[in-house]
Length: 329
Image 1: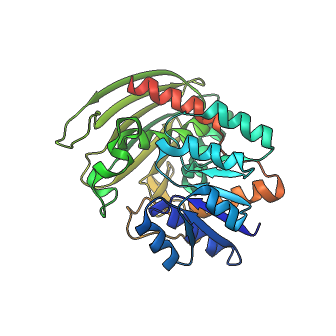
Image 2: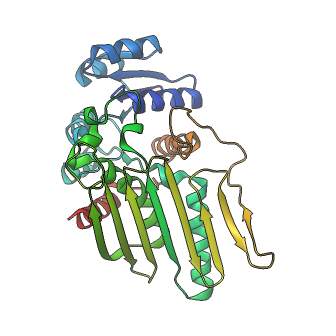
């Protein structure tokens, strides 16, 4: 692979470009964005930028494409890229628009369609999954978990008004994005969900037309119960997870330095280190770790070049999006 095309040169597009170039300095990276200012900024970063996909493909003949635009725009962009015969990596979609069409088109063109689910690449979530599944296999008993994820919506992108990017849209709102980010790894770790109960409210003065706080009880098929508290009003960004059963107690505060397992013999919480080192972008909350984005891109490159299986798929995502619709309904 010599050249990749990034569609959408905002914060995520620039992050993907930077990380891809760090992984493979020999890569040529080109981009597409409708905004002249973003194209100019990208050019300053060494990314040849174009106003349209057709123009970029004709000029650069890329080997693969990454879709890093607002979620609600993904479906048609993916279709356009697949029509050019390009393998596609897309950020999380939050809506199932075009899923059947694009899956069929990818099959027709015989190219991979890769869907981001970055939390599946976190060392902490993989540790929690392994420990919980090992415990349940050995004991035959389920676990429970409690999980609070929240951050004040205006702090998500401090450099722009929250009403001016996709979290201001009800279909792709901030709470829905949190569900879209975290439910895939919970589904992967604890299995399909069969029961849902939701309590939701708007408790802030935020100018959004959707509830800003949810309490959700999930019943998984294997007997696991989960309680989610999800909001966009918490003044401090929070990701607090606790998983417990008779003989297992795990704690995670959202970053690699804050994963613990309770040791019953000593009566203390023992730190668990799943990273030798980790990278963090200072513009974001400390629970956003760069390593997972690198590992995700590495998975995509391995899918293209070595036939490796992706960790997430459009088929699985369609199930999770239906679950989010049940929660929000």
